[in-house]
Every structure is written in C-alpha cells, then in structure tokens.
Image 1 (tube, rainbow, N blue to C red):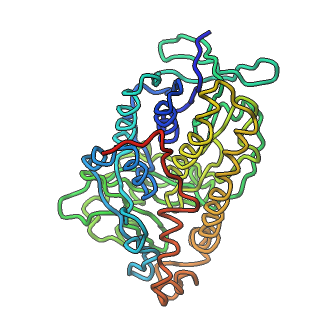
Image 2 (cartoon, helix red, strand yellow):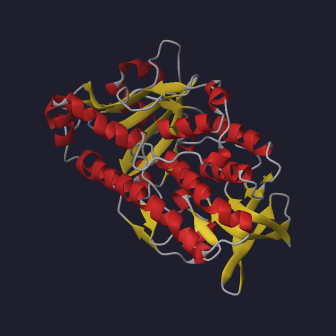
Image 3 (cartoon, helix red, strand yellow):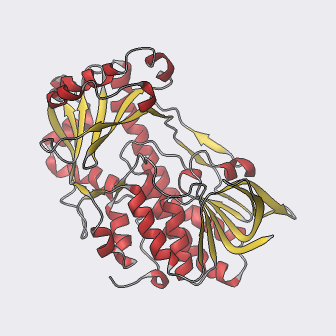
Length: 410
C-alpha cells in the first residue's frame, strides 16, 4: 500500500490551498484529482478579498495579478428597470476593495505550480477516490481508481475530503447532514460577448427571468434562476425563450437571441444548502462543500472553502508533522469554522426568503419599481449601510490569514 502523511481528495481551491500550506510546513502531502487538468467550465470564478490577501501573504500576489481578470466593485440588483445598489466594496478595509473574476483553472494552475516547488508535495491527476479504508475503527486512507483502469489504495495519517457537495468520502463515512430547502436551481450557459458590451457583472430581472451575466472576456458566463425542480418541465419549451426574455431587460442582447442552439448547451446546477453536524471522524476531515454545501447566492462558496483550508493547515500542521492527528485536533478545525459557516448560510437563507423565493414564485415582480424588498429599500435610503452586506459577502466572518510557516515575500 502506498503511504503519505496527509491525503487530500479533490484538487479544487480548498484542496490545493491546503496541500500548498501543509507542504510549506514540511508535511508530506498527496492531492488526488480525478481529472487530468483544471480546464473545465467552472461556474464560480470569483476570488474575494480574503483570498486575494492570502495570495499576497503566500508570495503569489504578483503572479496572480498577471492573470486575465475583471473587477467587481459593487453588487447591484435590477429593480423597476434600473440598477439598485445592494453593496459597495470601495469602503472595505484592507488593500483589496473588489472581487476579482478570474478563470478558476488559472488560479488552480497557479497554486499547483507553487505547491510543486515544495519537496513534500505530490499532485496525482486522473485519480479518483472511491472508498475509505479503515483499520481498528479509524480511517487510514482511501481506495482509488485511475482513468486508465488501474486501482489501488493509499494509507495516510489524515485524509481530508475536499471533493465537493457530492462527496464520496463523507457518504462513505456516514456523516449526518442537516439540509435546508432552496427555492431555486440554476441554468448555466455561455453567450458570445462583443467589444461594445458593458464589462463586469450584469444582473437582470424581468417578470419571467432573473439572471446574472459574468464577463469572461470573449464570452458571457450566464446564470439564470429557475424554480426548484422545474428543469424537466421547462426544457419542453424552446431554448430560445431564455434569451428573448433576458433581452427584455438588456436590449443589447437582441442580436444574440438565437445564440443557444439546443438544450445541451444549458447545464443544470442542483442548488443545495446543507452542512454536516460533525465534519470529521477519526482519521477523516471534511472541508468546503464536502462539509457545507452553499447556495450560489453571494458567490461565497469557493472563498469560504479556502478559508476552511487555511484554518485546517494552521491547526493541523504540527500534529501532522509529528505523525499523529487526534480527533480533538479535527474538532478544533470545525469549531474555528463553525461560526462563519452558520452566519453565511443564514445570510443565504435570508436572500432566498425575501428576494429569490418570492420572485421565482411570482409573488413579487422585481421588474416593477415599487416591489423592491424592504432590505433593499433601506439600503437605498441609507447608503452608509451598504458596507454591511459588502463586508459579509467580500470578507465574511473570521477571515483567516496564512500561518507564518507558509508566508513568502512577493
């Protein structure tokens, strides 16, 4: 059986950050990534100020600044034919007063290059964890298979599940999950972008459609909300109806209403909101979406997962270096990240209740000026309060900083 000290399953932002930080602490780390590369059509490409701060602390800020990026400096909602500001980021504390929209594969490649410079780090691509391995009631590693058809097992002092909301490892461990209903699912698709289009993030609302368009340079990454569970029924209609309804709010899309050629170009995200009651068993820790699946409301899921990874690295580096991680060490990680998770999910549940749910059910038509939800009306009348949702979205509760052992100069 192969062996490593810390086995991280999942090469997303949380897994790569955790692997990099632990490797800089001198811990032997192996990251399993089931794909051969990071070139996939990720949905969440936002990098929040807390993650930007972390990259600076890791000595990666200058390299990150060279990546293709767009900046989001305010969060707006279209109500009654005009944009109403929900949050302004220019009042945030710290150096980074914006959210960077960067292709996630570029961020992951940057983290992988930095980690590869550490002698104790190993990234194994095309390798998917399929089950847990136990010895004397304790998780001691995983079984895996490769895309070439190979199979095997890896033993580790600690296994960390960073394999997302459909985590194979948390299911194998039988960890109990608390779930909340969500009012929506999301359709994702691409639209061509021209040089005269606006830049940044463009939200839009019509009586029949709520969507956001994210600037990706030569194309728009578009997300449109649909009522929970309505995907199959909605796909019986013409796919072009999506763009015709969006063009009602954004007239400059009129020349692209036929851009979608079929429903296979529209991908469904089954929105989930849940969290584990306990994020660990002896020998296994869950982080990010594997511990707490987030709604896309606010776009905070990736950055919350990165913060989990930073806290875990700081708390677990010394026990891992000594070769023995206790259950009490894993419990410390959950205690540290519990409040940020609860507060963030509470914010998302509120957005579901007072804005998204009523709009999708038809109880509120946000395209009419008089129908703005009361929190939005308060923010419009008292601009100074716009810094509160900005802070919660962009920086969150208990932001984490790189431990001393992982810091490098730019």
